Image 1 (cartoon, rainbow, N blue to C red):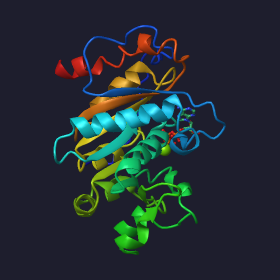
Image 2 (cartoon, rainbow, N blue to C red; image 1 turned 90 degrees about the vertical axis):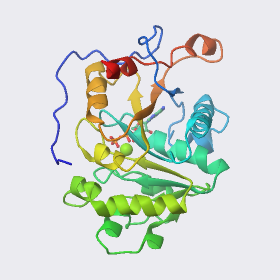
Image 3 (cartoon, rainbow, N blue to C red; image 1 turned 180 degrees about the vertical axis):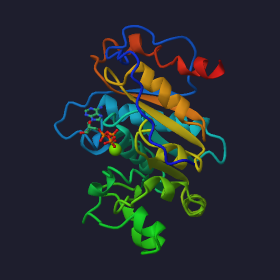
Length: 269
Ligand SMILES: Nc1ncnc2c1ncn2[C@@H]1O[C@H](COP(=O)(O)OP(=O)(O)OP(=O)(O)O)[C@@H](O)[C@H]1O
Ligand SMILES: [Mg+2]
């Protein structure tokens, strides 16, 4: 795995539509979900603070789809997006809580060693994690923490290593994921943006599938396509169109047919 930094595309800045008033394209991703904009000031844990919100319901539904459609050993998923700030950590956190609510054998790994964000859901906030584990400073059991008010376990990022891509591309990381497979039923892995760094693809080489997050109205379409092209190590098993603004319930049915994405067709070309 190279450590190359890929420049974002400079093609048209047209972004993924915000209101989804038109179908994005023909073809269909195997699984997809629209997650609406959270109206709370601190939206990160909608699974706890807004349990009956549409967003929480969408996370539960996505979890159910992934459980129902996964084959026996497809239990390790990475979560990424094309660019920064699209909601990778928001989706990782809430989806892992949806899994954890029904299956306590759920692990969320923060493999975004560049901009880690998951550790703040552990009390007290740890300063050790994946980096220290991979550099033999701590044992695995020392970096598995319970998420507050949740049944999900977290392996936080810890410190930032000098070369995150090398660490995540190593056979040692692959062995760690194998070991964790034996300990947990479901593992979700938060990663950096795939168009900027090869970390997400390196992580995905040890995963059964990738969930690709898109921020409605923000992710440029060419960058989305570039993200698809950069993910070579595992299949994209679903998309999450995050931060969608629409008024439910009136228009819920109107949008329900628009989960399909053009990229699946693109991949066949
Ligand atoms: N559906 C949503 N509704 C409201 N706020 C959201 C939503 N999704 C994400 N956010 C907010 O957007 C910001 C960026 O989200 P997040 O940190 O999950 O993105 P990220 O892709 O993980 O970013 P990074 O590339 O830095 O890791 C956060 O403040 C988060 O609370
Ligand atoms: Mg993040």
